[in-house]
Image 1 (cartoon, one colour):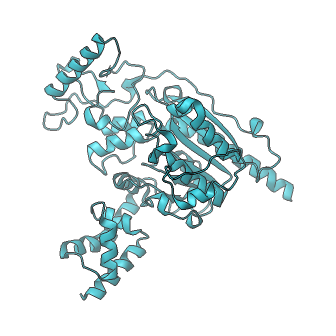
Image 2 (tube, one colour):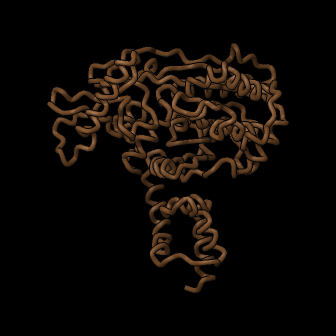
Length: 432
């Protein structure tokens, strides 16, 4: 195969699969410079090794297999009640409930290559990459925008720099899409700490921008895309409300609190009073028990046991907890058993040492253990057929720690979609 033929073959294969260069490189297991390498292949500057050509040839078959076996593949959905997009999608925790309510996901963005693999395995779709590199005009029309925008800048574990932190500025990438596409509704999710960050000013800025009442201007120390900066000069006009909801109040045995922000387009629904039309879900507050989501590992062999922590790690946990106790604070590991009502919040750092949620195994005369990937999925409310082994154990822990509680989103989704469809129906009746 001549170099020109290889270049054309790679480009045509990538485009046939509907992949950008970065996503194509990620699926080939390439490094962070993979996009540049793929570009070089396609322009004929250099050519891939024979081994890489073999991977490219197999890629189409692999994607077809993943597509066919993905448990939440929507390719055969012909009639949907609404369309939505899934931004900062992670592994699809926001998407699942809206899809289950007969919504059609028409666009997804997630930059992390490991989260992309889990998403692909479950939905049969490779998410688009970095949202800052995607023009808002290229995003399909949609009714609802979903966005669990990066929260490290506002979390207790993050830098707490808010809008001066690059991760905190991803909100403006959502705003640019709202300006361009004007979806009828949106749902945004973030950590509870957003509510009190900078004495409430950060959340107020977000709410004012969404309502069209902002005086905020992008500056050089806020590194957002030029398109997002331009969008700040445009005024939105959404009815907006927020609420802090806890996973344990919705049947998930986890003390996880998150801020949820909901909006409806007042320009489209110009005569609707959403203070009356929209109601937040009422938490059922059914009693929870951790044992309901735990796997039975009593028969697991030592060779298979990847969850019981080492003697060294356990000794370190105990030493650090004792040191904290002597200083008068409550930091350190947290130990739970099957009778515990709920656990601490599962975090993205869980893969490191599991300290926030350790399961007692004293009845087996064993050291405590971490949760299994399946238990993490259950703790976050994901269904049993959700694929949890598309990536390494460390990566899946990180992904579930970054995800949302599906139980909570399910109830919010019911409220958002029922309001949307009801008001759409009223408008349709008026136009007759």
